[in-house]
Length: 238
Image 1 (tube, helix red, strand yellow):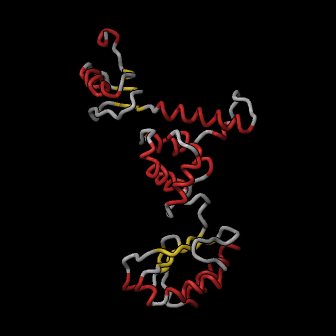
Image 2: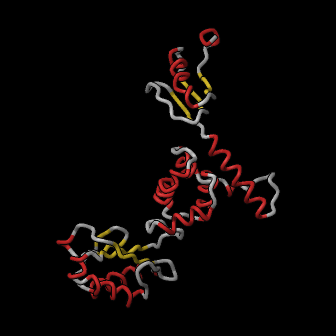
Image 3: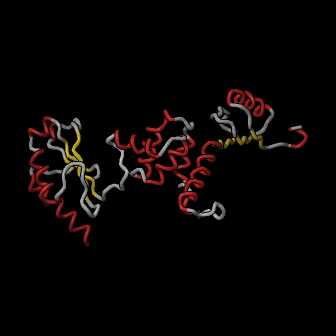
């Protein structure tokens, strides 16, 4: 049948355990494109074009739409395209099975792409894994590397390791506080600057280490740092 009709594309919709053997049979018949709906990744030769569909993701997105429409008292028909998840988030979901064990990894990937975990992203993650939004937010609160607010334009990171502390990191911290009126874990009201203190970064010979947006500053004391911050403030206003 395949040879008679010159079939070029095969669609796989079989249980996960059978998918790989079916794919092997398809390849042996000379078919060069596979559309895979089975919940597993298939190993095929490099000359085979394959597209993997994530049905669980599709159901999660539909569920998210329905919940939002009910909450906002909007009709399901005529969905506003603005509620579509970004393609980057869909790509992240496609790399994982909808299991709770992947929650932290999905959150890490999401924050890496978008810079923080937005309320919309939290909702999509919760729907994809069939858990509550509160569970996602609780996880974000437990791990200090997660942020649910947009990152500041200038992210200040100050090492508070033992060597940096001896070399004057406290003076730098005080300079930041006087110049920007923020403490560790806080951001300026305009969202321009944020500050976090971090453990030893393994660069003790050059301490105290302070960086802005991962760029290490060449400052010797609090006055030097204050000048750097004021320069950025002036630059932001211009």
